[in-house]
Length: 277
Ligand code: AMP
Image (tube, rainbow, N blue to C red; front, side, top):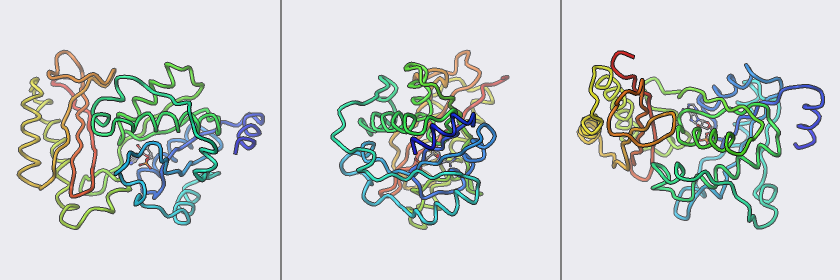
């Protein structure tokens, strides 16, 4: 893969990378479309990276189907699939890691304290292996996309980061490989996440500036319409990912939530445009 990347670069071709953990859905495939707009050679990595899972998380049961993924990715225009083994990615005990401080400890990081260190380190490795000019990530994992952007800026990685919008099912549920874990009842109830974010959007759009009130309306809706257990409902300034409690003078805020349905933990987010902006 490294040699292919070198050859493509030498031939003056732009390399676009789409990193994934596989079990592809339309959300992943939409990232390929974005990459194709910006690059000539599209590489998709499919790798369930063990270092971003903590003990007790779903590493062993994470859904996988490489043959199906290859068909879908190639059908959408991917030129190369990089699906390494753990031995290829971690041939010896790894001692060097990349960590983005502070933001990695908030929100998802409070519930998964070692997660983002695993993500940034494996993405740094993928960048060094594939040498992409551009890499596409999904807004679905808003905090991850922010953290990778910060890593790239702070450490002068020579790669453009593009963030693609969230692909949703017809009923609004954000697409996720983990949705297959949901029972029928949980799948039905999980649509409340999107509705709660829309509710937040309409409250802030109408001029609500106190985000505690927005949170409590979202919480009421989620608990009334589902048995989901809320890990967090938070609001951040999208520019720096600092938590905020008031809209203040920001043109928009980012609402993020994580809710557990049975053993399945779902995350979602939405930009809320402030009144008059
Ligand atoms: P994953 O395989 O879940 O690690 O996701 C790989 C990439 O696809 C990440 O950049 C995700 O943010 C992105 N992604 C996952 N689900 C969606 C979605 N519903 N819409 C857009 N991008 C997504």
